[in-house]
Image (tube, rainbow, N blue to C red; front, side, top):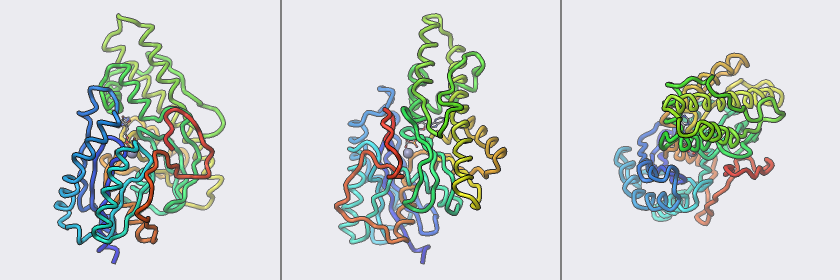
Length: 356
Ligand code: KG4
Ligand code: ZN
């Protein structure tokens, strides 16, 4: 029964246009992604208007490709799932309206997916991890520690009070002239640098709670660049990238360490599973520090494969599968949301980069 389910998932909340078909047992039948990196490169960051135009130009073709690769057509679909927030509202509306149109035309359920839930539940599609688990969601728009209790049930244990981790990587890459997108560029440069050359701050390290802060770190990098002035060398850039990456890893580790203590206290007698997801989870320095921390604290570290850490349609289709099986479908008047926290009870943190 589960195997016969086929859900089409659409993602368009940022700078990837994506469509995928996932079966009820988690098999990814197709996962087509069009990155807009080249469109945004000249601006050093995502331009919402350009993103929206690209989504509208390519979405229909990507859906056709996803269906073709999955060897099915609209009549084989059990439901359509589309990201309905949080994200750049123009893009979100394009994916969501396309999904609703297919659902209406084919008379099948529509599921409006929280993009963050896509990242949060990917590990259940790839590794069938059972609830509950502790999650670090680190992406371009978000940096949160969450207890994942069930579909639609989250406790936010910590979040960023200013920039997201990926945003800090992107802004630092821009300051260092390393190109866009910043995360992979900083990681590559860091491999050639010496992390002990610059003493950068470890924001919030040792402080109570599990919140993150990255904006001061990025400013510290800018100050070092200004201090050196015109004589700055390529090696200085590499050393700054390495020092920055190490400072980010140190800060994240300190916050996750506390998050684990909180989880152990508030979720006793459950398996100690720690999942890392989102685009920044592709960073191998972060992954290896987290792996060491997990060993020390007795957690098993789980992470989706790299290609499913960054934005994709399969993660949205999978949330569709999970929700469809629970009867959690949406009506066609569901509104797109620029902000949409996973834990509605968590206190609002009004930092510049916090989108949920
Ligand atoms: O999850 P994602 O694709 O999009 C959002 O939902 O935000 O994450 C994109 C973010 C970007 O900020 C990118 O610079 C960062 O993930 N990223 C990395 C790496 N690969 C991607 N950050 C650090 N190291 C990487 N290797
Ligand atoms: Zn994402």
